[in-house]
Amino acid sequence: MLGGSFNPAHAGHRHISLFALKTLGLDRVWWMVSPQNPLKSTSGMAALPERLAEARAVAAHPRIEVTAIETALGTRFTADTLAKLQRRFPKTRFVWLMGADNLRQIPRWKHWTRIFDSVAVAVFARPTYSLGALSGKAAQRYIRRRVSVSGVKGLARRRRPAWAFLRNPLHPASATAIRQARAAGS
Image (cartoon, rainbow, N blue to C red; front, side, top):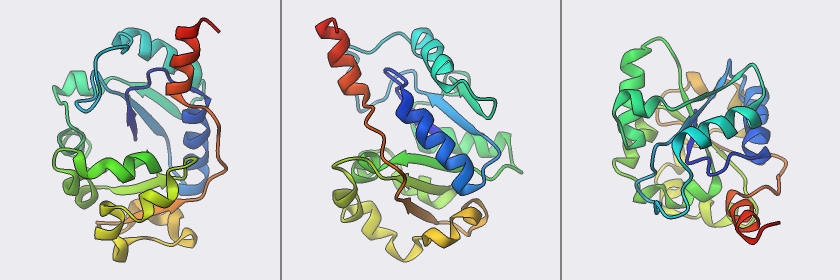
């Protein structure tokens, strides 16, 4: 599961999803397009239907599923969404996918430790964020539960908490840069 605003979805999201499918041995990746990230401003946020449509166009892969399931579940926070999904799909082994930027700031998320305690977490390298993320509060709290790169294929089956930092090939796409370019008319 790759959650986010997807404002807009871009080739970088697709890039890490394909990398996750292969490296982690996942059956599929769900892009959970958030109705509204509680930590982000609504200013400049495209409407949910627009973000969903763009995400579907960018994903363009049979094993990447774009969903607004948080709307159907009535959840706003990742920990709550994951808890409901685990009740709905009790035999599914979920893996939460996120960039190094989110690992750095996840302690700001509501009930963030419940995320690590309930699902495996795969963190992807991002330009300029990786070093800070690995020295941050979340990485240090769960340092003994970090899975080596050689063990990531079985990450979904590991006893929780279990997480891995993946040094994936970096992709230059950035939603912020895309929004800025669109605003500038280029």
